[in-house]
Length: 214
Image 1 (cartoon, helix red, strand yellow):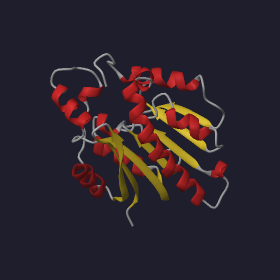
Image 2 (tube, helix red, strand yellow):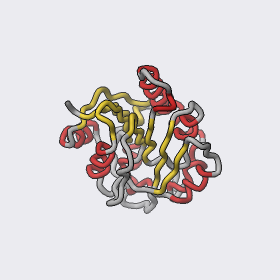
Image 3 (cartoon, helix red, strand yellow):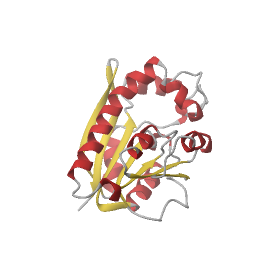
Image 4 (tube, helix red, strand yellow):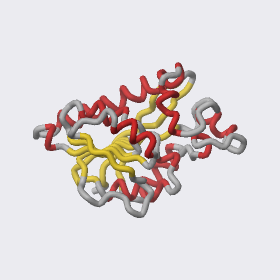
C-alpha cells in the first residue's frame, strides 16, 4: 500500500490501483471458491444461512453475498466505510459499527460462516478478536480468516516501513503461519486447511479455513 493511502478509509481507492487489483484477484478467487463450496454443502435454502463479514470495510464481499439471498451481517469499526456500504445495501444485509476486539462484541446470534479478511493483523488484540469470533460461530460453522504473510515481498516492505511511516497499514502486525496456528490452537479453533494467494514474486496472503475444535 503506497504512503499515499494514509488510512483504511482510502481502501476503495487503493483497490482500483494496479497492485490492488492484482492482489484482490487472487485472494477473492480463493475466498469466493471456499464460500461457494460451503454453501453448496448446506442442505437448506440459502435464505436460512447467516454469514458474518467481520471487518467488512466498504463491503466487497458482503455486497456480493447479499445478492445470493443469504442473510449477511457486516461489521466494521470504521463508520466512514460503513456509510459507503449503507448507500449500496439491500434488505438482507445488516450493517453495524462494531469492533471484533471490543468489549461489546456481538452476542445477538450465531453464524453459519464467518469471514474475517485482512483484519486480524490490525487488531489491538488479535487473540481477543479471534476468541470473540469463535464465540458467535455455530458448532457446525466455518470460519475463513485471511492474514498477510510477513515473509512475502509485501510483508518485508511492511516490516521495513513500520518504524518510519505512521499510517494505519504500517502499524499492523503480520503473523507468520506458525504464529497464527499457535493462536488458533490455543483458542480451540481447528485449522482445516491453509491456502496462499499469489502476489508478484511471492505468496501474498494466507487464507485459513477453520472450525471449532472437537
